[in-house]
Image (cartoon, rainbow, N blue to C red; front, side, top):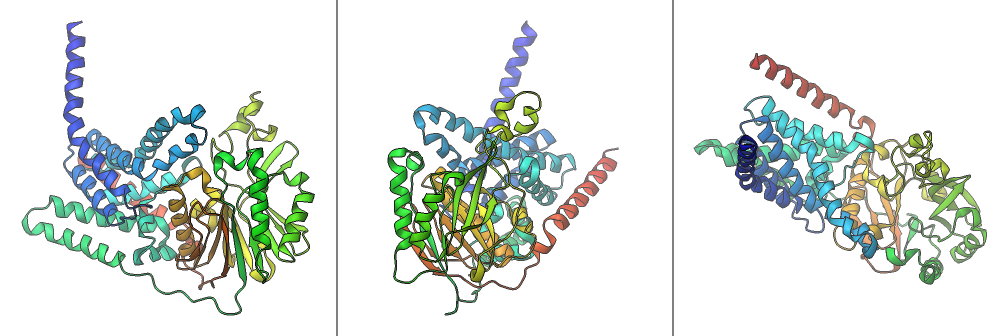
Length: 505
């Protein structure tokens, strides 16, 4: 009994000894998270990560490295992903109590990838530089594992500057390597002695200076450019499906569709902006077509196919005929479907299976939608714009990217702006313009360099007529994808692991 009490006291003492120092990487991670919108203090991301990597250099064991990486990642993701509480606050009396647990669990879950990377660095020896490939590999894994969740990648903070343009060649994960290399340089500047500090400091300063350079100009839309109207009804999530408000939001969108003396070439409504199933929407679609007065319309609507439900985008031609249907294929786990629900349905748990009407079913995958004179668009419904690999999965190069989304779920502070930043990165990677219709905003036209050329403010209703920006020449990243970088990082990690094993024997 005495030994048990003594052991507990020793463990508590060790924890108190670790908790104080771990506040350093935790705070450094939180500082790094401020690089994302709406703060946009992008230079703090490499600086915060530099402090975290410097702290790793002071860790003597793999376990200490793991804890340091977990603290750094927890601070970073808690700040960058704090919008995750917003969906639970839509019906706060019922679900609000879940919000803090969701944030803590999400932050820790994402931080595990960084913790494993830091553990691996210390497992390989005393050198700190392997943190660059291991963190980059961790972020790649986070983007793909179990469907992936690449939101808040460190590379996204560069979207406003010159460094972000490199994504057209090496993708966002390649830009992550640049970010982690700059952070390593900063860590060397912090931990070096005398003149040894200078090289790291110079590299970090040069990297920040280059990243601050303006984005090169993209070609402007000419007089012959197609004109697109983006509709933003601004339906708050707690009212969007309320029968007392649904008709008002629908009529608002119809009114915006019919405004103006000149008809646009394309009208785009946001995700799930039609409050009725496609299967029963003939009269509703006729109202929209009449307001469009001969213009084609792309809109978001749900539909049923037997027992299966789909989150869809449809195209109506100038006569109001539905000519194309695209079904969202990358669904939000637990938000739109239950992971492994269909598998569990085979064992009699049919209440979880999408094929039995629970949640949404996934569409067949990326494909193009022919918009006539406007060109061929790659439709992206909400969450799908988060995944560069999905955009790369288009069967052919489109003429534009077309995102419809309901960002009302993301609240009013950070989520909608971060979603917009990721859409801008997709435009950079592809060298293509993007049109974005968002329920509560931010609806925007984005040029092929990722710059917002026109937009509607968050939480305002209205419409935006904009000339479609031209596309650029094909970029490299869509042709290579992430495989070359993934293979290179995997080989480098394997070589480092083998060398560390030999040195330990």
